[in-house]
Length: 401
Image 1 (cartoon, rainbow, N blue to C red):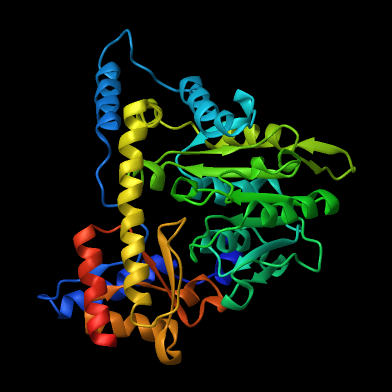
Image 2 (cartoon, rainbow, N blue to C red):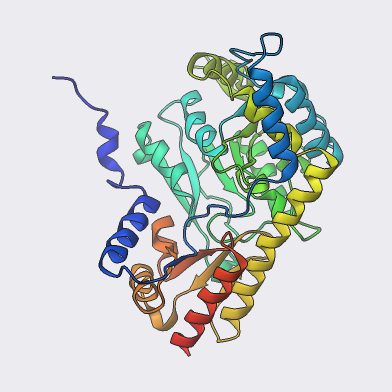
């Protein structure tokens, strides 16, 4: 008989958000008249901006003409998009990158899961707790279940992880953070970069929500920190920046100066390995999608995209202020589309989920789904419509008051 990868038996049977969807569907089936509002999964609701739509149409038309039709593209991404990324996302912040250090993909989630292909199963991995589940689950799938450590993040330490006592090989960081919506300042992030340089660790930096940053001292890229290009790989996404959750496009930056140890002790550039991995397992993001992503960087695309981000941030502010006004402890929502909410009266995360679904017809994400330190919290997102966010908070305020 064919044998399965037994590491799959070590992860939860269902993905957190699949479990939420199942519980919501069950409730909906027995309460057909309920108007359920979701503040749970972080999916956008605003349509793609006009510049992106125009670029999509143009690219589709090109694919219907012999002279402009394109088949396989470069696995690393088209140069026209890579050049825009470097100019707008990095050069504008004083960061220099070579074109072959940027790899276009179908989203940060895929890259964050696939990057583990480059590393030995014996590597010691450290993640924050609470944490985006993909970091943990993909490492368990790869055989590192016994090599995962956690850095607890709580209100007591302002959700700022302390440097691990035991030296890890790989450090996962996500800022602005999913799920807590909190951030690190440049000086706080510098501690991790300095630590990685001293210990020989690698930082995998998930910067998917950088477009929501509003405060000056919060870095948009880890490469704003001196020395980070020697120890960090950065992941970005157009999903939340430009509403591409259904279009699928992101990119990963792998500086050629980031290296890891070979079995014989020599150093190997991870850029070279990632390129080899992508060429083997990935045929590249579609030309049409990459043209759409390119349009995000046009002056009009930037204007329209920033308007959508402001819309979601206004929702976040309404949620945060509305809950705080009735005495609830809330975090995040200033530099991120997520609000981390302490459950009332010591309720468990899933208990509060059930309470809000049954009493308010509002769906949230139980914090414990992100790790043990998430127990006693729920995550709310600001990606709904303004009207739904306002109605949801009004319902919650009425029932809790």
